[in-house]
Amino acid sequence: MKKNTKLYETVAALMASGKGILAADESDATAGRRLAMVHLRNEAENRQDFRELLFAAQGIEEYLSGVIMYDSSIRSSTDSGIPFPDVLTAKGIVPGIKVDLGTVELHGFKGEVVSQGLDNLAERLVEYYDFGARFAKWRAVITIDDEDTPTDAAITMNAIFLARYAQLAQAAGIVPIVEPEVIYAGDHSLARAEQVTTRTLQILFQTLQNYRVDLEGLILKSSMVLAGDMNPEPSSPEQIANTTLRAFHMSVPYDVGGIVFLSGGQTPKRSTENLNAIAKLGGQPWPITFSYSRAIEEPVLMAWQGKQENIPEAQKMLLHAVKMNSLASLGKYDPNKDNKLKYE
Ligand code: 13P
Image 1: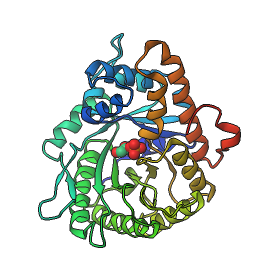
Image 2: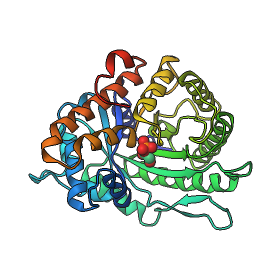
Image 3: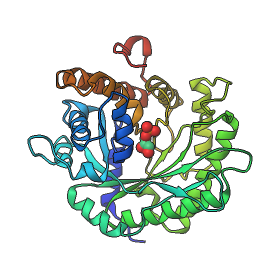
C-alpha cells in the first residue's frame, strides 16, 4: 500500500507533547441536552454562541492540538462571520469532524448497537476536507451488560464499520480516529471492563489490519478501563492506569499513531487524575493524551450560563481545564498546587 506521509504529519501535529484534543462534536440533540443543564434552549444560536466561546478563547492553542466539530458547527461561523474551521486553523489547531451518524439497534442482539454513516461517506469526507478538516472521528458504542454482552458479533460488526470508515478517511487525506467506547455506566467490575476493552481492541485491530488500514496514520480514541459507575468497589487512579495500559499492551499494535482518551462521564477532576496516573507510568510505545468533551466543556458551561457577561470567566475555566489536562498528559498534574479554580 502506498503510504500517505501527509497523514503522519497530521498525526504528529495532533499528538504533539503536552497537547490534547477537544471533542466539541456533540450532535445537535446531544448539544441540546448539555444546554439544558444551564436552562438554555436547544437553538442554533445558543449552540453557536457556546462554540464561539470555546474556539475563540485566547491561548487554548498552547494546550489543544485539535478540535473535533460536528456537521453543523464545521459549517458555522463566529458572529463576525469567520468560519469556525478558519478560527481554529489560524491558531494552529487542526480542525476535525465527527462523521458517524449515531447508533441504531443491532437486530437480534438485545441492547447492542452499531454506528451508522457509511452511505455517502466518501463524498462527505471530500466536502469536510474542503472545509479544512484534516482528521475525523467515528464512535462505536460497546455496552457491558451481562456475561454474554457485548457479543463478539456486535464488536465485530462495529469493527468492520470502523475499518471501512478508516479506509475512506485515509483515502481522502484525513486521519481517522477510531473510537470504540466501552460504556462506563453499569455495575461491572474493573476486571470485567478490562476483559471487554481488551477483547474489543483485539477484534478492532485485527479487523483494521485485515482491511489494510495504515495504523501509523490512525489514532485510537479509547475509554479508560473503569469499573462501572454503579460498582461499589473503588479503584485508585494507579489501578486504573495499570489496568488500562495492560489492556492496550495486549491489543494495540505499537505502530498505531497515538492514543487519546474520552472522559466518558467521569468528573473533570477524575479524568485529569487518571490521565496523570497513566502518564506517570512512563513512556509508552504510543503517544497518549486526552480528547475530552464533557470533562472539559461542562465546567465551562456552568461558568457561562448563557450570559454574555460570563464569557471571560467561562474562557478562563476552559483555559484552566485544558491546562490541567495538558499537565496530566505529561504526568505533572498536582491537584494541591494546580487546582485553584472550581474544577471538580
Ligand atoms: P466525553 O469526553 O464526554 O466522553 O466525549 C468524548 C467523545 O468524543 C465521545 O464520543
